[in-house]
Amino acid sequence: MDNQYVVGWGTLMLINAGIAQGKNRSGFNWFLLSLFLGPIATLALVLVDKK
Image (tube, rainbow, N blue to C red; front, side, top):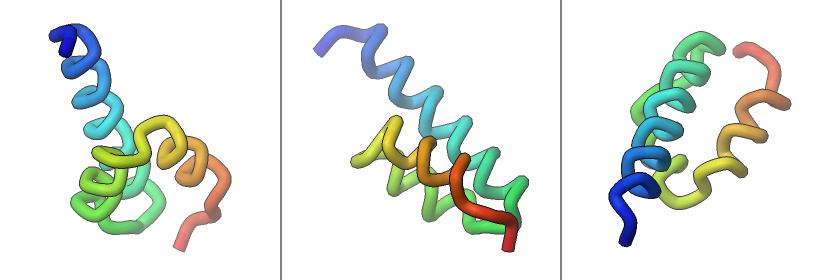
């Protein structure tokens, strides 16, 4: 696996956790969810309303 791919995916996970916390959701749960879903989790976070 290419190192740039791993770094990019890890960065996306951190960004998703930050977005989730900004919307009063569990950053850790979204961090783990992003491990598997990646960009799909980002799209879900952008579309969901604040708690």
